[in-house]
Length: 477
Image (cartoon, rainbow, N blue to C red; front, side, top):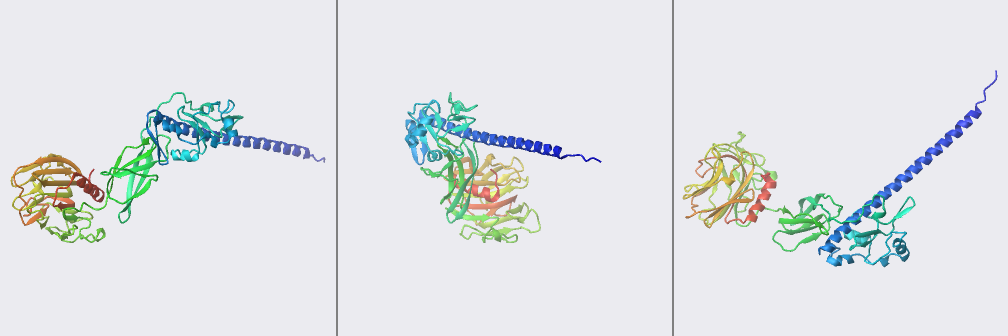
């Protein structure tokens, strides 16, 4: 039987296979090289657009006599055209190549400055690794090194395929950045403020921060988004880069409550005066944190009633038996302020949120009707409809009294001033919270904090204390 000879067929198949593999490899390499080149062209184009946008901003400042900051130096108006180094810092050979009809197509070097990486970084332009010749007055941007692609070298946007043509200039219509701000205490009288979640639709990624306390004149500047301050209070904070900046944001760095004039301070978390972790659910004494020893006594509270007694961060009054008494610390005071954080619980008329025996000085809550708050003395009865509160919502209320005026604040904002005639009667041995000091007109409410001052608090002091309450007890905006 004759054998078949397959060696020729096998050799031919092997050769064909090798040829196909070489063709595929060549296609793959060619495709990979093309992808890399395209990616590099995209990066070059992006950098050129970033630089063009920044130069457009500089031009806007140049023509409108605005100021540009660069590394601590200020350039205004026509001085902006002098930003950068002399183009002679670049080799003559490279300059001749760029400024030629076969290069950038631009041959006149007058007015051009050399923007190296230091200048670019100082202007806050992120994402740019190249260097450029710039003429601000002409809004002209030329790459120093150019980019070679498919046999052509590109130096300007106009030369690029589908480039950003710089024919007519319109100022960038982009709103300033928005951002979040927070802080933490990092030591004695040291607080670190941090900026995060910056949102901006333009090309700027690097921002500086200027900040100051509300009542100070000069701004401090930080090149970092985290920085430390040594004082508490309301800060004004602005992000900026050149002429682009955010709106002023007000932000509180909080320490403790206002101390000046503080007579009484009760806190429903730190109710024992030994710290938040020592909160007690059974104590019958509400410890005064002011340092004046004006502790309060709980009356009628029970521990087996969900509407009565200490809870995790509040003292609940059931409206039937519960009220708190303390020494009348405002007797014969010509002026005083009372601040408290509470949430009303029931619809019953004429509940005293606090009061004094005899003259029935107090703040009443007629929540059975229109739920307005009232302030009553022996000779007057003033309604504050602006202090109307929804049930079960935590609120901060401040009442300042003196000089024949009553000022009312709701959650840190003044809602009304009222002038009254006659003397302010404050006589009585006891002061009460949740009723008058005879235990009448009890209220069903939750109390979180209660403070008494022997002076009229200023608007800023009221707002400052409110912001502490807001964080500590989640009071309403």
